[in-house]
Image 1 (cartoon, rainbow, N blue to C red):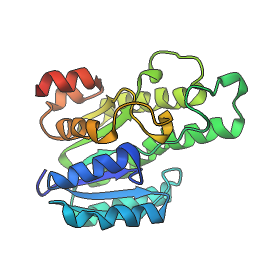
Image 2 (spheres, rainbow, N blue to C red):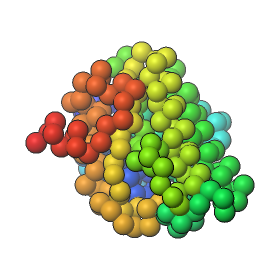
Image 3 (cartoon, rainbow, N blue to C red):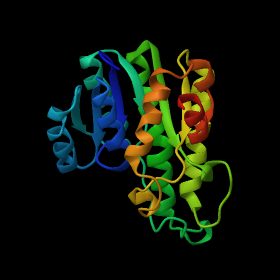
Length: 229
């Protein structure tokens, strides 16, 4: 990923942080955002030990003006070669938020962050994308297979996948979703794979994977492992 510019949202922790660091290790210049300025400072401080660079900027993906400024900052580094629309939230204990008991505030913020945030990230990045850029959106099985207790979080992830298909149909760059399985993040209650263990899947999808196999698709861990074993 030498000489590439990658835009990654939600880099303060979990998958976003792991992907930002892995991309930088591969030589990319990462422009990352999160809502926590302190967490961003901590991430930026680790960049010296990596081959690439990490530039951070506080931004809330629920605010399209924040996202617009973020994309403009990335474009000042160079045309954007990869977008990872990762920022997400889960209100409540994972798997214990049935729809019939959810608050309207939780429903609204799941949709605003996990779905509208993806929309804003991709929409604002489009004018700055390189000709061979790729857009990656993390997802999970709950977006496609109903599971009790995941409420509007699952609804928001299904909406994010619909956005992937819509953008894939309209843009002339590959747009795809990566199903990471259960990853040990705050959103999953800390159970699952270490985020560092799945960061390589993003490198594969951003570089080696054929764009036609990515565009409009949902790719899972099995596809990655079969392709790279």
